[in-house]
Image (cartoon, rainbow, N blue to C red):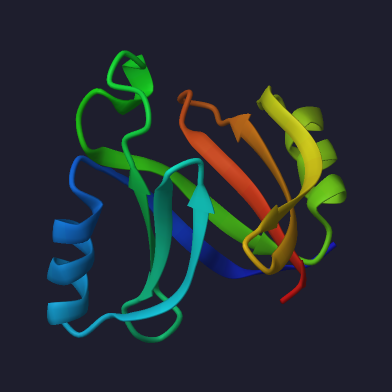
Length: 129
């Protein structure tokens, strides 16, 4: 298993269009978007592979999504399962086990754990675009 930096940092936002306009006006470039229900998530490249995932607040009653905030950091890895297994072995707590998913046209494998201070860490592998 090998890590290759960050894949993205997830940011919960109240107004995804406003945030999209802000980050692209700063010089970011939309590299990908995908629907989740009636909302659209965006990946904005801020240069040198620094990517922000704009996550529209989906549930106003969710304690995780009440206020805009940085939600998670996604570590780019070539083996989502191995990264997850190692994290659990090192004492991380399971949030969601590795699973394949389609994000629009991108096929991925991802998993989430809670790190030592209960922070959200995502292991992210792009399987195909």
